[in-house]
Amino acid sequence: MTDKNRNANRTSGRSGYGKTSLIEEVTAQTQGYSRRQVAEIVDTVLDTIKQKVASGQNVTLTGFGTFRRSQRAARMGTNIRTREKIKIPAQTSVRFTPGSEFKSAVAGRSTRRS
Image (cartoon, rainbow, N blue to C red; front, side, top):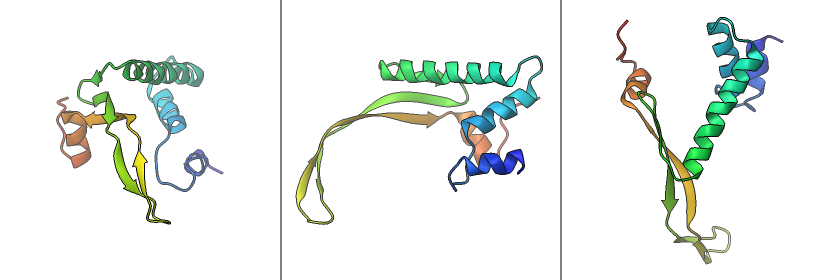
């Protein structure tokens, strides 16, 4: 089984790109850092983003996007089996707003100049 197939199996049938794939690609693109060191850096970055957003701070990575904490209001819903009205409580969630460079890259337009 190739590394590509092994990583594809880790996504449980979804087409996607996971943390393991990211770590492997960053390791391949950088010199002087082992896979373990890159994994530690990626974990530290992600943990820091989680901690800051959980504490109510926005995290902006210029060109990439902004992570922010968001409050969803309580609302009424319907149980689809019984058609009974139910109250859905307020929830705190996270929102991501992509930055202009990210949006352009996804749209196939290059904004970076070499």
